Image (tube, rainbow, N blue to C red; front, side, top):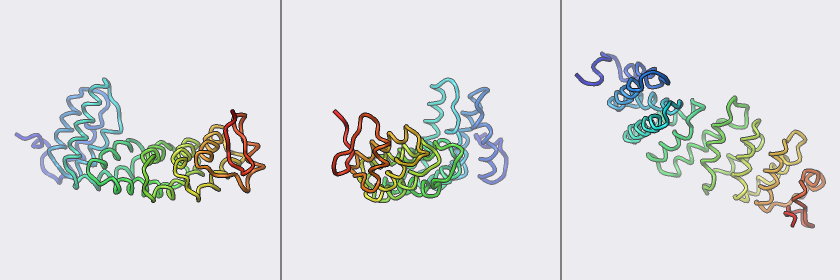
Length: 242
C-alpha cells in the first residue's frame, strides 16, 4: 500500500488539502507531521507545494526537528523546479509570514533577475499602505539590499512614507548606497517632518550623508533635526563632527 492510498480518491488538490492540518500541526507527535510532508512530496503537484509552504509559517520544538523538517520541505519544493514557481509566488502574495523562505525557494529555481522582479512587484503591490505586520515589507526590502537592478530604487522610494518606522528605516538603508537622485527630496521630507520619530531621523541623516546629497531647499529645517554629531558645510552637505 502506498503512502497516499489511505487518502482515497479525489483530485490532487483534494489530497493536498486533507494533509494541510497535519503539516501545520505544531504540537503532538512529530511523526504525524513528517509523514504528511512525505505524502505531499509524493504528490509532486503545485497543490502540494501550496500546502508544503505553510510548514515554513510555524516553528516547532526542538530546534533540530524544526530545521530538519523545513530542510526536507525546501528540498521537495525545489525538486519540482518550474512546477513550484507559481504556487510559491502565490504564497508570497497571500501570506504575511515566511517571506524569506519563499524568496529562498525562488532563488533556487529562478534566475536572479527574475527573483528581484518578484520582490519588486510584491513591494509595489503592497505600497506604503498600512499593514498589520510590516515584517513582510522589511524582509523584501532587505532581500533587495546591495542588488544593482535598476528597478529597485523606484520601488523603494515610496516606502519612505510607509506607516511603519521599521519599513522607513529599511528603505533608507537600502537607498543609502544607491545615490539615487530622485530619492533626495523624499529623504529630506522624511527628515524634517514633525511626525518623524527620532530613530528614523537618525537613519535619514545617515542615508542622506551616505548618498552625498545636499539639503538645498531644506537647510533651515534640516539643521534643527541634526544631532550633536553632525553639521552642514557651506554647500549644504552633511558632515560628521570630529
